[in-house]
Amino acid sequence: MKIQSKKVKERYIVGYKIRTSNEKERDISQAQIPKIVEKFYRDNPLNHLENKLDSSTIYAIYTNYESDKNGEYDYIIGTEVTKISHIPSPLVGITIPAKEYTILTTDRGPLPGNLISAWQYIWEREVSDPQFRRAYTLDFEIYDERAKNPNDVEIDIYIAIK
Image 1 (cartoon, rainbow, N blue to C red):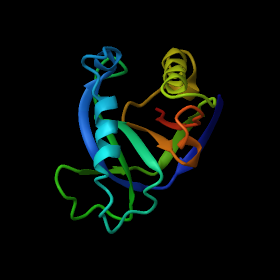
Image 2: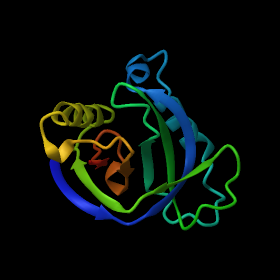
Image 3: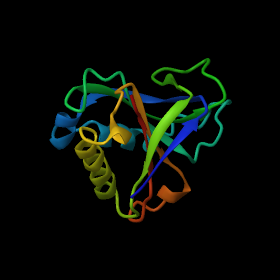
C-alpha cells in the first residue's frame, strides 16, 4: 500500500445513497453496499445527466457519520458533475470539500479483498498514527481506469484527517 497526503479541489458528485454501518456490511444478509453498487451499474442512472464530467470514474463516499467506525454512515456511489442542480430522484448530490486528505492506494488485487484489507489497515492505524486520525466527516474512494478489471483493482481511499 502507498500512503500520501494531498490537498484536493472541491468536487461535486451525484449518485445513489443508502444509510448503513460496518456491522451491517459484515453480515451478508444485511449488507446494502453490494446491492446499491449493483443497482448503480445495472440502472446506469447517470447516463442522461448533462453536466457529468467523466462517467467512467466512480466515487464511493462515506459521510454523515453517526460517530466513528462503529456507527452508521451514509454511503453514496456516483460520478463527478460540474455542478449540483436539477438532480432527478432518486439521485442525490454531495460536495466533496477542498481540503487535505490522507490517501491510501490499495495493493493491486481482486475486489473486495484488497479494499477490505485497506480499510482494516486504516482502522488499526487510526488510533496510533496521526496520519490516520480520522475526522469522520467525509471519506471517499475513487474507482478509475485502474479498477476496470474486478480481479486486478487498485483504488485510492481519501481519508479526512483531524
